[in-house]
Amino acid sequence: MPARPTPQEKAETLAWLRRISGDLATATIKRLEESLPWYADMPPARRSAVGLVAQAGIASFIQWYEDPQSTPWIAADIFAAAPRELLRSVSLTQTLQLIRVTVAVTEERVAGRAEDLRESILLFSREVAFASADVYARAAEARGLWDARLEALVVDSILTGEADEELPSRIAALGWHGHGEVAVLVGTTPPQFDVDQLRRLARKLGVDVLIGVQGSRLVVVIGRAELPGRDTTAEELPFPEIARRLEPGFGAGHLVVGPTVPALVDAGLSARAALAGFSVAGAWRNAPRPVEADDLLPERALAGDTVAKATLVERIYRPLQAHSADLVTTLWSYLDNGRSLEATARELFVHPNTVRYRLKRVSDVIGWDATGPREALILQTALIIGSIGTEVTRRRNAGMRRPGNA
Image (cartoon, rainbow, N blue to C red; front, side, top):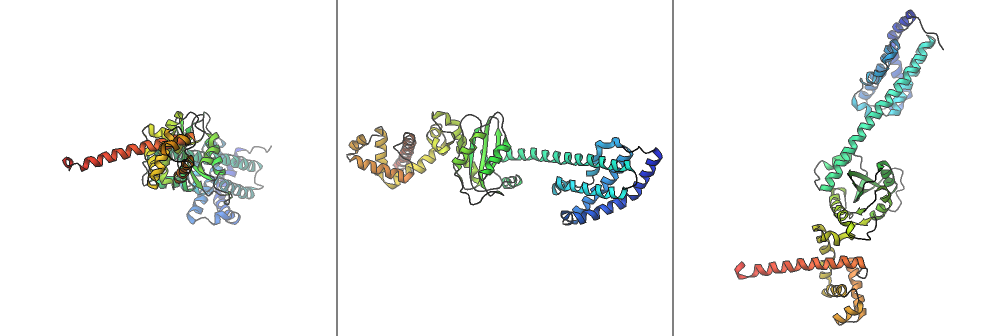
């Protein structure tokens, strides 16, 4: 344990430190240029800012040596000289390297002067290191809170369909890596929600996510992403499979996958379908988890979802009608007769094999198989809604042709 200096010795040491402080700063800057390549590559303005921080650190040490009780304001005193941009351009690791170089230069210069001075330098450098970590931690925390608010705003804009010209810049500010296709997941928020774990799992699956927590509802926007360190030759998983693997990150209850859309700017379409499906998923007693929003088209249509009605007409009724009237007639008869081939054949005066052939053609044209109970419900709902729309249109056109309405 070094002997404590007398007041006279300490005063002389302080005076000496003040005299050499300029030389210390110059020697420190020279050592930084020699030993830290990233410092030499910095723009002149930033190198100057780093030099100011080094000078402020030396001045703070002199003040601290005179009054060790001044520790609480170390960080504010040193980093006040740096512009705010410096915190974003110089990492915590680089800051610690700066401290190490500054301490090494100071130790070399004061070697042999006084043992207590060297110990004071070590104590002060420790305090500065902890203060630096605190500054960066606070900055990271503030950035995290800002990112969370911005992410919630972006997700809300997608859900409401109120995308504006600022949406792309907001998404870019979040560091979104997604490109191409996008889908939206809607489920419940778990009691202990670990957002970081969900992000890590998504990245392993080759997708990036935007996450919005709206009370008990959890909304996740999924986009394909080219992430560093991931095998780019790996096969891309379909979004329903990705949703299945992300399912443990959601709370109990239904989990609905919206349809795939070409880009993030179209995510509102997927979001509206997923939200509509989530609101009626309880009407399907054996709904899987996750369930695709398009598999809930009958329930959504019955609940008044105009998008579901239009989807049923555009993807089922009109393609069948345009392909062949026989397919529509056969499908109607098959569904009305309880999916009985024989009863359908008798009604249509054809062979059961003809019914089988036509049902296969129905499946080829629209992609749904009428022989399954769930898909039969979807097809029957499409026929009903399509017929209602056709009948209403026909009556309206007939009314417009009457002489009294001319």
